[in-house]
Length: 147
Image 1 (cartoon, rainbow, N blue to C red):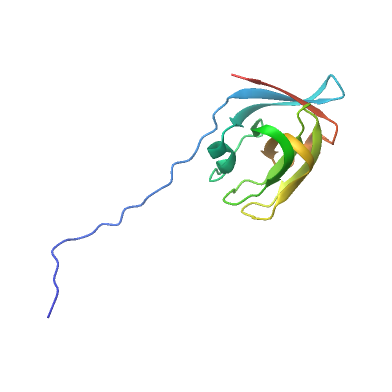
Image 2 (image 1 turned 30 degrees about the vertical axis):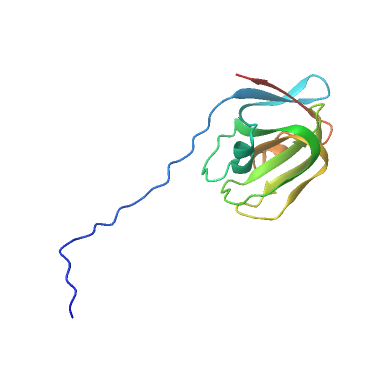
């Protein structure tokens, strides 16, 4: 028995849609009470889906951009870089807007747990190298506004 088909198939290239940055606020980083170190545009992840997805599947982010994760409570936080191709710095921030710990140059695509050193209400993801560039350290503060 021979099987013959008249149908021809064409291969379709399916390209994923690039997720673009959506400015939802601005964030300033302060040393002491007033010296501004840096100012960036932020995208806010404040619901379960946005917090789980974060910067996954994105291929670029400008140096003047970041993602601020906002949680309903303050507790120790754990992040990972699964499906994240951009090398990132992470800042863990308490409910008083004070940086309590940080991770520099997190390895893209890693499933290693990146843990805060204490309870955090916010986590800020920046491009890798920004902690060093701005000489950020525990005790520095953030201020942010939303649009």
